[in-house]
Length: 247
Ligand code: PXP
Image (cartoon, rainbow, N blue to C red; front, side, top):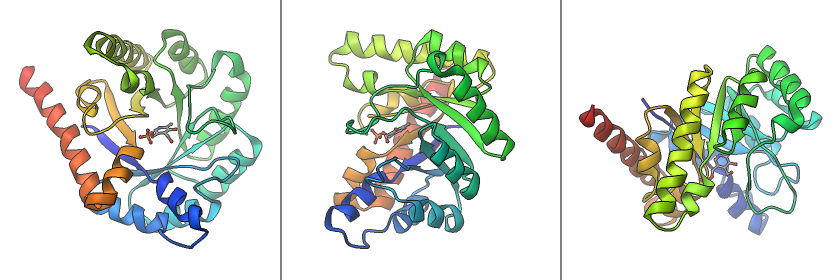
């Protein structure tokens, strides 16, 4: 099975652009669930540029599927997570000036802080994943800090040009996924996945969950969000079926 987490940050981006109360992220979450989303993913950034605290609360209390909260490893965010208690937290690096999350967490360089945060969140009953580049050393470090899961950053795969480069990046994701799974962690992936490139990642049997935002919200402008989510889910499941046929 492969799960789809739908990231609805950019619904909030549109809302905030005009300072109006709409479009509402919680309404988007309901529409995504109708299209088959297995979870709703939101990133509460330090500068609140899109998702705000109230959005997280409303989605957490009112939406039927799991909530996956992406957040930086800061005291403020840890306190919010303990208060709201999302089903899952994905720890991400965060820099104010970036347009989107640009790279994976440096686990080895922040081992004590990350291990402490993972422990605190797990004690609060929250599953913890780490957003990592598909890199062997990063996976080994993740195993050391007790993470339940790893979300592999697929940005390099998504941006690769030409079949050779695409296959190289895909192989890096596969290798990292194999290592992570051997270490007992669940393997997720996300960033830059769209309707054309998702199938190769979805066909990796080690990957159990994809978190996808920008491509789905963009397509939703033309087809509606429920339909955009359903189409993405269909693409993922078709890729998975092909693998099963090959076995
Ligand atoms: N996963 C993580 C950890 C992210 O930071 C993001 C971007 O917010 C996504 C997935 C979704 O990326 P995209 O919007 O490119 O699908």
